[in-house]
Image 1 (cartoon, one colour):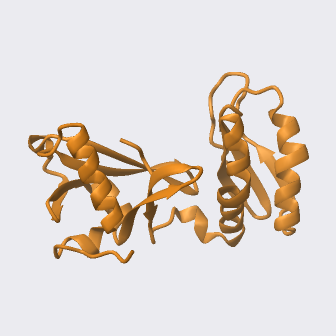
Image 2 (spheres, helix red, strand yellow; image 1 turned 90 degrees about the horizontal axis):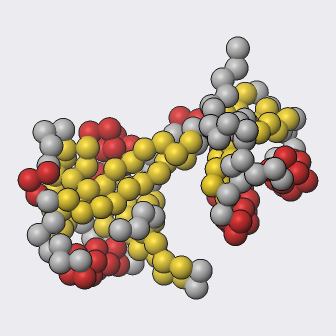
Length: 207
């Protein structure tokens, strides 16, 4: 199952943890029927994709796979399991299903943000990555992630098709850096922290 109208909560638990729009509910039920998983529960989990972004996971599990650490609730017949760590990151979020010419996907509207986004520069850079840079890089199978912001220095990490690419430095200097400097003039330095040689993605930490 893929990752990413007015919401109508159907139980006391839903609005405090996760609300599903009518479109999302209909799509989940359609997938359950297509995969013969009508009795299965939907597990929702959230992890850090980078210091400034969440990655969401949606998949079906059997009801007996609920763990003692799970929060379990029902939304109009859809049983949902959320582990404790994910629940803290998900509280108050809404799950929708979006269909556009470019594709269709589940989408979370989540009021909870990674701590780094409390930094005004980080928030601006992440917005630029989401709205302009990553949609362009995605056409090459890549993704650019915000690893850190220290004072006015921005640290980026490349993934997907950009990871290990010999042209990544050219891409950074001639494309992404120009876009960030034009949109956020207070940024003084932009650094690529990806280890393209070894294939690792080290997280940069300052002294």
